[in-house]
Image (cartoon, rainbow, N blue to C red; front, side, top):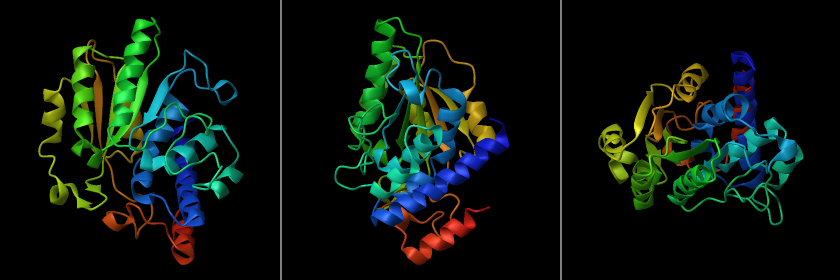
Length: 271
């Protein structure tokens, strides 16, 4: 896909996020919208061996959504990639539906790990990367974490393990939108110099000034590996990206748009 085609996919995924959360009357649009370019870049450009017709290929690259509440962004991306039909969006967060509020590996095609409890997804990803090395597989493991998630000690325990085992087949993507459920990071639990923290834990760091710019995202995803080090992509993003009344507003972390708001958001996302 060329750049314009990738940007068009991002626009459709953002529309799907709004449609899903409105229909369910629940969900997390803010942090889903900020993550779209990362997911589209991964699934349509970067990850190797992924195929909706063979979603259990043992040699495929893996993706773990550690910030599992951003499931609408993942579902929109997987749908665009061909893993299931758009009609499934009508069953988002519904009993017996395949699209649960957080990703469920037993229900949803294309999901590599069940996540939701913050900190556990990055831990799973570290285990996947280590397991792949033991099996002699060349696959790469990607995981997306949130900045609020970095309040969890498991993030740092997993990071110590990643550095200790020199997991250069692991890429951690930090969706750094500056907000979490109860306020800004600085208000709730200041992360301080987050780049310095991750460097101290042994990562090779690539900082992306605008994680909602597809060109910058792709450049970071394709940067040459640093042998013997896990990588962290520090993506500066905008919560609620693409919907004017959601952008930079912490209140849209976990609130669904009503009918009027949905109509406005979809109109804006038409381009």
